[in-house]
Length: 506
Image (cartoon, rainbow, N blue to C red; front, top):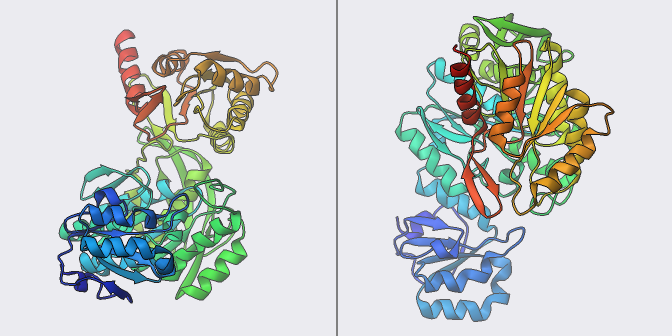
């Protein structure tokens, strides 16, 4: 595609060079620019791409986009680039221009799809998996884009970002279109919205799951308000909004969504809304534990079962059922789709022949572990045995709070390693134990080797107990000192259970 074609939907100023050059892609990293690869100079949180525009030209990039506000301060760099033969254009917003270029290059693939986007602090991953399962089993041929993986017609690819950069995002949508995908459900992160990664895409349904005090740090959001406003941007490009009535700052979310979309619906697991739950309880269906709940929507009320434990997963299932209903899926199709839900690393049940209840979950801070353990308690007839560790080179508060939470809400804790990085395991474990010992008499054991820790917890468990392996969830590696080793909790737990089955002759 010629440069003038890929820029055809963008307002720009040509500073110098030819627009008849061939462009086959665009990069945000000057080291990847070159040949037919354009370079987009973005002002980032920690770095500024304009520092690398000469390097991109030296690498042979045919087209370089800069922010118009930078023109005057880049006089010497621009002169050097002109001599190197690259074309330079300036735009008012390089992030949006990058997204517009991607939309143009891939011929706006989202225009032929029903896109459902979910933003929120918690619940996005599980809810998107449930929606994905429902839509696929309803014959909708649904793609998935999210934190754990991207999925196209049964093929899964590990994700780099919750919401991909614009070029990768449009390429994914293009691949989905080529495979005949008609719907796509995706997690839309606050940073993805802030940095215009989904710019140029119209969402049929936009969902706001909740808003908690998180992601406020160096490299993320400067303030809570920045985090909040970033999330609201989802509704700038949605036809229908769906908002959790129980979220913090609900009135502000609903007001913004109502003024930026054709219709704003609400959902709630506690109290009436457009979509709500009358009753919920732990249940078992065909030997599989989960939650049963009465789903109430504007057109009917019916009972659904989802094979996921904990009240908060009913919140996620309610969100998914409401989305599916708004997308035109029938009651029978929603009910059927929910029966097959399995979310990697989110209360993921590890099957075994020992009748043991073993789950892997991503809970990796005090708040999320507390929510998880409190939610499990009503369905646990025996003990809750929790296995977890804390990452090295990270804030220490998490170690004390996770220790105290596990001591208070578990019946037994196994402290183990989890991405200790450059820190000594003993130091990290000592802080966790300090937290556990804030609960007098709370029993625990320290086993550094994570596989041995999991094996010990499973071996001591009985059918009425629940073993929770927390902290890593869907993660596939673990970093110890300078080594990055493959370690997937669900895989290791399965291996341990197979060995125990053999040992016990099951």
